[in-house]
Image (cartoon, rainbow, N blue to C red; front, side, top):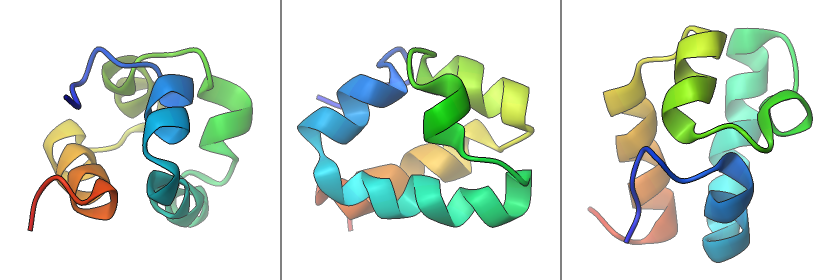
Length: 68
């Protein structure tokens, strides 16, 4: 199951379709989340990047096919 304690690496590895979501956030953050936060948890990366954790989780779950 998908949760906020998973690392970015674990998320992308288990759910490759989420890569598009992380790439889309590049425009908002101004840098590559994967390059800078690959070993951070989703919660840590969201906090450090100024992203809304709930929004990001929802988008990632939809991309992974875990939620509609």
